[in-house]
Amino acid sequence: MAFDPETGDIAATELTTKHVADETALPALLTDMDADVSRLLADGAYDGQGVADCLEDKFGHEVEIIIPPPKNAVHGKNAQRNHHIDVIAKNGRMSWQTKTGYNQRSRVEAQSGRWKQAIGDRLQARDFDNQIAEVKIASKALNRMTGLGRAVYERVV
Image 1 (tube, one colour):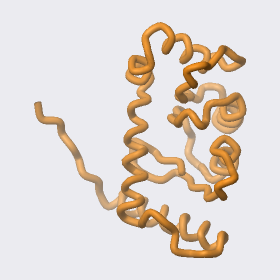
Image 2 (image 1 turned 45 degrees about the vertical axis):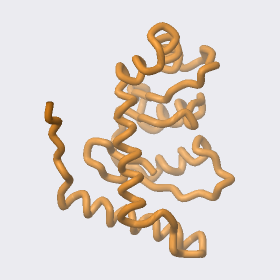
Image 3 (image 1 turned 90 degrees about the horizontal axis):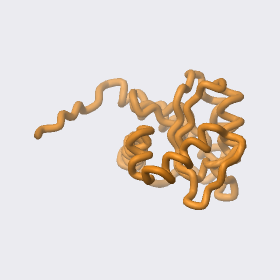
């Protein structure tokens, strides 16, 4: 699933079998997206040159890719990733998360929790094609619910 952390909308969905890795499913997920993406936050499963190439092909070289490299990461062809490695090595991973805004990914995780609370943590259909349709319908329903209004939180100090 691809979420827009600003609006709370589900931007795209792609249902796969358990044998498909996140990086492999990304091109199909991006084909469903109509919106321009200027920034992508993803977990470490998406760390790889294939992901960077796919995102740059779809959204241009200006797309900001914020994916935490593994602890044993080495420099490669991607300048953004190399910069992330350098910043983490110099200032630490927590500082990198703050500087890059990676902490916003928690909003996306909260949206996943919202899905499980409103829709459920498992699909009802047994046939894979019907499951794909079920996911698309659920995504549209959640987007509709989000469009009706979201809670506004204010920090009290």
